[in-house]
Amino acid sequence: MIAAKVREHAVAKSQYSFKTAVELSKALRDKQVSAVELAEDAIGRIERHDGKVNAICVRDFERGLAAARAADAAIARGEHRPLLGIPMTVKESFNVAGLPTTWGFPPQKDFVPAEDALSITRVKDAGGVILGKTNVPVALADWQSYNEIYGTTNNPYDLGRTPGGSSGGSSAALAAGYGALSLGSDIGGSLRVPGFHCGVYAHKPTFNLLASRGHTAPPAPPLIYERDLAVIGPMARGAADLALLLDVMAGPDPLDAGKAYRLELPAARHTSLKDFRILVIDTDPVLPTDRAVRGSIDKLASNLDKAGAKVSRSSPLLPDFAASSRLYMRMLLSFLAASFPAEVYAGACAAAAALPAGDNSLGA
Image 1 (tube, helix red, strand yellow):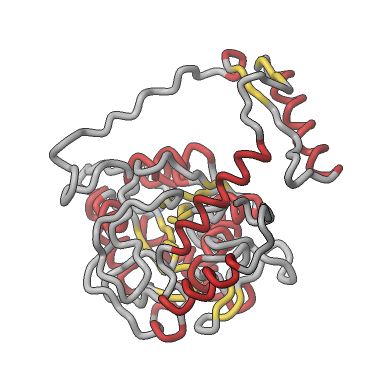
Image 2: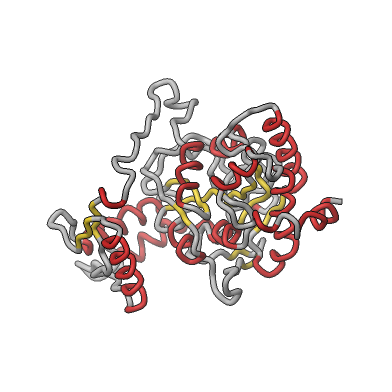
């Protein structure tokens, strides 16, 4: 029934498939399109294309359409909410009540949380229409998106290439037109790497700006936690949409610090490019960029300069990038080791003890 209804609208509403959330919100308010039509359009694209892309590992079309109908009713009553009626997806690692959360671990393929992650609750309260969950690598620990449960996610622009990871299912979904927004997470590039692999936008927020309760590896309970480097964050097809979704998810966890402080993000210091000072860095001593990457960065810097921004190529305030990379590896390995099973931790300790004295290859 859903597939038949979707096919009726697929062609008529395809002009909305790649619009930003800001553009869709305006179209909804102006009654140019309904939330149900937007949801059906996204579902139609998933039905037609995801057999090859494999971005959506868990579909939730029935509840998504119900949320869309509720959004249309709210709009008809004159309600205004930040994400009202916007079709979107979420990374598989976020708990959504009634849907599996596996993090790609085969032993957890049947784990189903009883309640939504806090960020999912906030998205739903803001009117977001969640259509499904997106694929991840095992343990969210790779720059591609494959696991034995759901298989491999491919880049919509070239099916022979990766969409990145670990939020690669989300970046592929955005690039393929499966909704205007998605939720991801990041420790060492898991938002940013998929963003540039698929030509979409992603933002790694300031640590602890977005509460992570419910973004928890199964079968652990959704306890409040703060882990070095680890954050959740927004993904979108437009830069302005990142701020829209960030504002919805931001704020303290009410179970922990919700009564202790109130989040008030400051307004942007400037609204015009000509008023900004921009530092451009086109390479790195640890991992030098190739000519194509430097060329793209140089083109961006040139365009910023033409727009009136004050562009600099160096600064005495920059840290030692090689030293900061070593520090990052120490923090990352500490983060990973904290959750090692006892036998894995023992093996890591034995391997470290066998290293030659003074070996700094892993950032020691």
